[in-house]
Structures are given as structure tokens and as C-alpha cells.
Image (cartoon, rainbow over all chains, first blue to last red; front, side, top):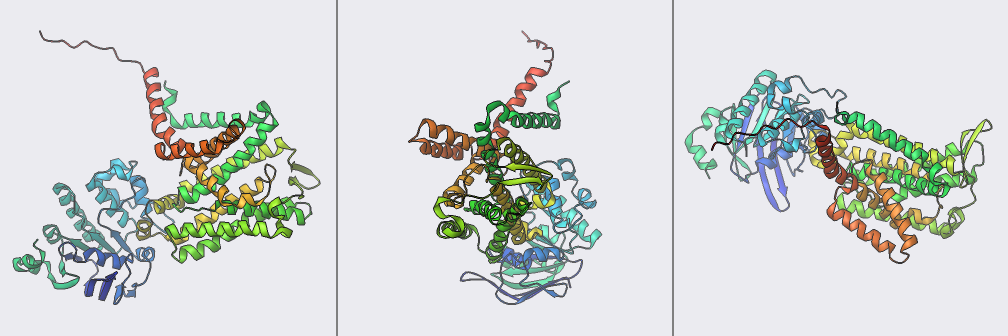
Length: 231
Length: 348
């Protein structure tokens, strides 16, 4: 088990965002967390990486309780976080963004497989991150998260705002990374097709609570999707 | 052959020209101008120290002058009370270490105590006020509002073998020492900024929590940056001894504001901008206070507002963004051979 979330409660001010959330991600597994807007998916990822404080329960990374550990230490433990909106550093070049991913490590060499996965970035190494297209920025954000060769990748709506053909490419890349490097992926998505095209296991979150879970093939059942994911 | 194409060639030429110009300056324009320029270079170093923490790390400090003043007072007090050969070196050490110590304490309490943004800024104002008041009140130690006088000058070199005195009368001595120090500080700062640590500092400035989840200990880095900034400010403080008066003003809020103005006018986050700002504002103030005795402060204020409104990246930012591209285009047009134009056939 690379990640276990147990009885997690998170408040933002008076609002109870996450209620007693329980889920887990196995080594090398791709887990999708599905749900509509505002159901708490982003809050959950932020709690795991330590950006959002929790008010009950625990987050356990490879057997270690990291509930109150600061974000930079959780990153050092092998978690790569790709937030909604990419959040690359716009005034740093592509190369600098990738090197920044090697935080805390003496060796700032970008892993050789990075440009293999993200060939689009190969020609743009000296370009400022802010001048890239949405899809390129998404690749850069994932590349940066992978620079430390993490064991777990947290992806928050990677397909949002990206043109469909690039979304396809992203899907292939994530599957490749998972298969070739055994990196576990926790994917938060509203785009159910994107999620189902790669997930092994799914959780569905509704109003801050896990209301359904199961192997991806099972969850594809229309009734469940219609109830919880339809707009 | 288009020599201007090669950027590093161009940069080297400019650097040499600038260094030679500064080197010849006091010889050409005389000792009074040399004294003035030396003072502005010291201010440039101080401004650079603020640029490191404000321009590159994104942490504002309203009492950068406190680090400067601690350096100046620390060195002056050492020189007065420790009349041994080589006291200068101890004075320099104290001038650099005393502000660094304050920075570590401030940084630790504030940054690890998660006091951020506006609150941090207010606390820096408070710290500045405390030291300003101390320097006024502790008359027996600091000389109070009259200033601190009667200390022997800085003496570089090896005692009883070769000594370079940096007294108020030795303009050429201290001018060249300050010039060399300015160049060294600039090169050191540039080295830091271009290092992985420097790149990470700039990431912190862009967005602290983003840098955090990428894996950087943002709090620790801010403390390091603040400490480095304090050390450089302290160095500028000891270099101030030959060119200025050690008095409470140099610890004051008004002087700290001056430092902010130099960085803002010159260009935040450019390293060379602080020097440009210190020189431009310094000369503007000197010139205007002679010519327009009653309104010079108003004009400086208006100039500052103008820069902030129309040149938010300061003078250096404006030159880089607007002047350089326009200049390159002109040079291109002048030096490139135009292709023979072929008249297109227009069908009747």
C-alpha cells in the first residue's frame, strides 16, 4: 500500500469539506477519484501533499504517518504533485522548471526519460514556461513532478482545458509512466472517459464523502455514473 | 561580420568600458565627485542587499537600514574601543556578523512562526524603530543624536608592513576599495542567483506554496536569503565609515525607505538595478537640493511615482524591455546588407 487515507476530516473555516474519507492506493496502481465540481477532490489531494491542514484522521505514505508533515518533506518522501491549473513557474525556462523538480537533491540532472516521454518539450528547453501552450504546460508540470522519480503521482484534473488530441497524448504518457516505472497514480478527474481509459480502480466522491468504489470496469456501470457524476 | 550579434562579446566590452569609466572617474572629475560617487556605490551595495531578499525572494523588509546601521555602528564601536593593529578586520567581521545574527533571530521567529506578508512587514518596521530608538537613547554608547565620532579610520593591509588608510581625507584609497567591493559583491550575488539555490529562491518569489510542494523548504530558504542580505548590508555599513556620518538617521525608517526607492527605481530583481537606482536617485537628490532648495524632495517623490507607474520594472527593466530590442533592430538594419529587390510582375 503506497498511500492510505483513514477517516480524514477537513474543514475550511466553518465548512466541513471532507467527511471521514477512507481510501487507498496500491503500489503501481492507477486510482481515479471521480466527482463533480466542488465535491472535495482538490481538497483531498491538497491534504495528502500537506498544503491543506487536516482536522482528523490520517494520511499514511508507505506505512509512515505524514498527516502533519510539511509539503516539502512529503515531496521528498516520493510524492509528485501536479495541481489544477498546472502551476509551472512562468518566468523560468522549461529546463529550469524541470531542474527545480530535483528539489533537495545535489544532482540536478534531468532524468533522461523525461524528454522521451514529453518529446514536445525537447525543442523548447530554453523557452519561458509562461509562453507554452496549455498542453505543453501540463506536460512540463508532470515532467517536473517526475523529476525526483517519485513513487506516487498526484494529478488534479490533468485534462482540464487541454485540447482533445493532447489529452489523448497525456493519457498514453501517464499509462507509459505507470507501466515502465511502476509509479502509482492518484488521478482526480471530472472527465470520466479520460479517467476510465487508464484507471485500475475508482472511487466516487460526493459532497466530501466516498459514496462508491470498485474496479474501473465495474464503475463504468451507467447507473452509478449517472447518479453521481452527471451534471 | 556582425560583431553585435554575439551577446557575450557585447557584454564583455560593456563591462570593460564601465569598469574603466569608474576607474578613471575620480581622476577626471576630482576628489569631491569621487567622494560622492563612493557614497552612492556604498548605497548601491546596500540596495543590492535588499534586492536579494525583496527582488529575488519576494520578502519585503522595511528596515534594511537596520542591518546597514548595525554594520556601521558595530564597526565604528569596534574601532574606537579596540585600538589594536588589525582591528579593522575585526570591525569588518562584526559589521557583517552582527546584522546576520539579527537576521537569523528575526527570520527564525517570524518565518518559522509563520508570520507572513503584511504582518512580517509591520514587524520589520518595529525592529527598525527599536534600533533607531536605542541608538538615540543609549548616548553613552552611541553618542545619541549627535552621532558617533572619534574612532580611528579603517586600515587595510598588513599592520606595520603596508597599510591602506581609509580616512575621510584618503578619497582615492577608499574610492577604489569601495569600487572593488562593489564589483565583488555584485559578482557574488550573481553567482548565488544563478545557482540552483538562487533559481529556487526565484521560484519562491513566484509562488511560495508552489515551491513548497515541489519540495523546497521555503521557510529555511527565506531565512538564508535574509541572513545573506543582512551580511551584505552590514558590509556596506562598514564601507560607509569613510564616506558618511555614523548617526541614528542611518538606522531610521526614512533611510530604509530610501533603500526601497533605490531598488524600485533601478529595477527590482536585476542586481544591477539597485546600483543604477542608488546612483540616479543620489545624483538627482544632490543636484536638486542645490538648485531647487525648497522643492527637491517633492521632485524626487514625483519621479518615484512616475517610475512606479510607467516603468514598474525600474530603469533597468525599461531599458531591457524597450531600449535593447529597439537598439538591436536599428543595428540590424544598419549592418545587414539589404537583398536586391525584385519588382513583382503586375498583370495588366
